[in-house]
Length: 351
Ligand SMILES: NC(=O)c1ccc[n+]([C@@H]2O[C@H](COP(=O)([O-])OP(=O)(O)OC[C@H]3O[C@@H](n4cnc5c(N)ncnc54)[C@H](O)[C@@H]3O)[C@@H](O)[C@H]2O)c1
Image 1 (cartoon, rainbow, N blue to C red):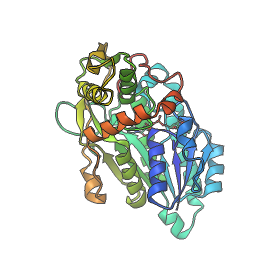
Image 2: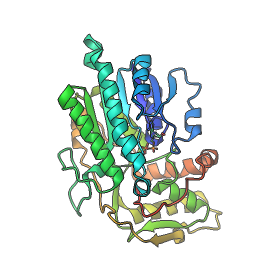
Image 3: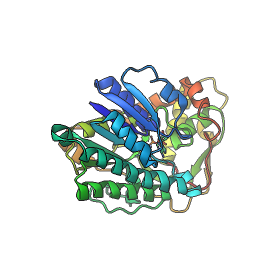
Image 4: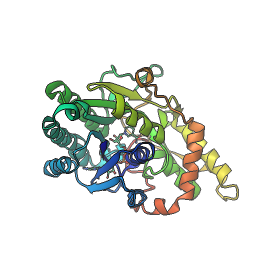
């Protein structure tokens, strides 16, 4: 089986590519523009793998995509390429519209042309998995969870661009019969996440004795899923989900942002017993909240459990310990992220 993974050089995409290479004998084509979010060392780790190919392609370029489909003739497409940082979407939304909406449109069209040219069992078996976020549903109150039937109500430019892409993907199934599956997942964390995002930012800033900027009252709630659990869910969905199906994916690990910050600080205290910055929690510095900061996200993923038997395996405590250890043990990877890392940008939300 040949699997084409868009965004395979990014945080979740690279975890998925490694999972597919380790757990199956499929051939994997990473399709990635290699933006600031794609650390060169992430792809360098796979450069000698005999079943992996990297194609540096912008998904918003339709012509390049058509050639890719012809060259690699995939059985599966798993679409993760996106601009993914809420803060950046507030400062500069144009790239989010281009990649997340237009790029998804171009990908769907290239996939449709290719799929319509297939015949027999290969056409029957083809699947495209569109990977999205629970942020498309807006904000939850103090109880309840998002499910596959929740109404779309995105608030940030990032969430609105992903919601648009979800609708395009579902429409390409309803209108053209393209065998699309849509997944909406809660917040991921783990190794190789670009350190402008909450958890790696706090780990690296904390270890360096820099301030840990916590938005607002710190009581916004997110559900956290370890990235390898997400990769496993996506591989399963790509292998077994029916065309037109829709799945929530979650970690069953809701935490306030302050709880997450304090958990990171406790892990740093333990991992760095000689640090002059202990206790790291004193580095937490409340900063002004951003307008439109969704209060709470959480997902009911019981459909995925019932249909395909998936559930998360990593607890938040064990996953966070692994994550903190990974960032402390990989300074070269962190340094290769360049100047955009380790900053809170503008008024964006913690993601
Ligand atoms: N990180 C999360 O918590 C989370 C949760 C749910 C869903 N998602 C979704 O999962 C996907 C991956 O998220 P991530 O956190 O790994 O993001 P990421 O920013 O780490 O990776 C995105 C990748 O897409 C590539 N890319 C960007 N624009 C491109 C373009 N025009 N053409 C080709 N490649 C391009 C980047 O180079 C990068 O490698 C996204 O679609 C995101 O919306 C993320």
